Image 1: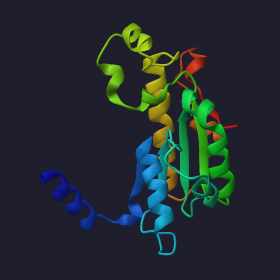
Image 2: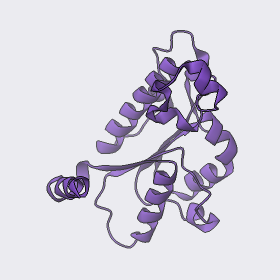
Image 3: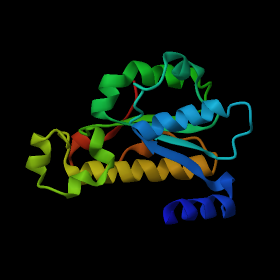
Length: 181
C-alpha cells in the first residue's frame, strides 16, 4: 500500500546512521527481538529508544542477552513499577549500551500516545489512561527527555541524568523525569 511504499522509500534513501528505532510497548519488544535476531550482522541503525518496553511477549533469556547497540529506556511510572525487574535485567545485560534509563513520574502506560487529547482529564483518569501527573507537565517532561535522548543517540554522546530533568515543571514534582532504580 501507499504507507508501505513510503516507508520503503525512506529506508532506501535515508542514511541509516542517522536513524533510530523507536517503539512503545509491544513496539519496543519487537525492536528488542529484531536487534537480537540480527545480532550477528552489523546494525545499520544508530540506536534505539524503548518507551514502556512490554516484556511479557519476551523470554527471560532475551532480556538477559541485552542489546548490542546504544539505547535508551524511558518508562511510565506505572510500567517502571510493574516491570522493574525485567528493565534492570536488560540494562545490566547490555554492557554499557544503555545511555539512559528513566521514569516519568505521574505517568501511566498510555502517556506517550495521543489518548490524552480526546477527553477531559478527569474522564481519562477514571478510565485509568492518565496518571497522577499534570497532563501538560508530563507531556513537556517527556518531550524534553525524548529530545535529549534522540540528540545524544544520534551524536553518540553520553546522557547525564540531570539533562533529562524537565526544568519547566512549574512546581509539579509529580512529572519530573527521574533515574531508573
